[in-house]
Length: 252
Image (cartoon, rainbow, N blue to C red; front, side):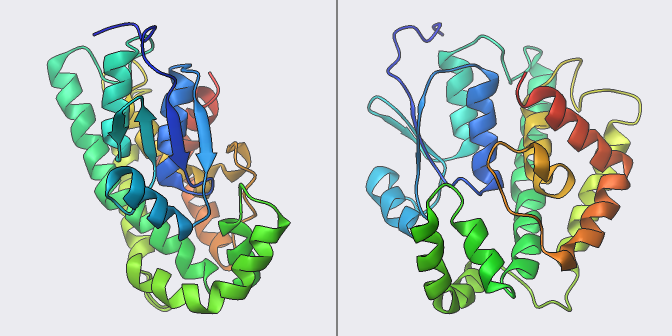
């Protein structure tokens, strides 16, 4: 383990509107690591990811010759190279538990939030183009609006976006928020007595629903059809915990 002084300046390739990518951005900011960010347009990012890491997804972090193509790997590498303000608990049992929760939120909560948002977004081409263009200029939004009819079916397939009548994304998100409520009923953090990767992961993924206004990326408002569910989540103790955790630690 070193203090990061001899490490090259990291470069984060990211999608500005993505909650998966917000997890990596928050980790870098939490650890106060100087870095360079390169935001890429959705769809175009697939070619960039293949070139950099042989994958199709962002975020990707470059540290010199090292290329990390997963947010969980990114956080582990950051803690290894820059140990200050650690996100992985020192206690082995707590560390295992935090990593377990991170993996569960990565594979259950995050995909459900994405499917839910796109379920309501893709029926509104203008709002969809506005969201996907975050991080770019007006020209990007105009182009995305033009290609939206071709992109929408692919996004529905690739991101498992159900029809409007199917409520499975809502049910999964609700179950996860209720689970978070149970785990934080008498404690501030999900694991141990300090902020960890478990808290960061859960709050990153719920932020678009419970505290969109606090997110650094200037994201458009949620679709009107999604507002009632977002308000329901925000009023629940688990949703309140996520919003408070995000606001208290995102810029701390």
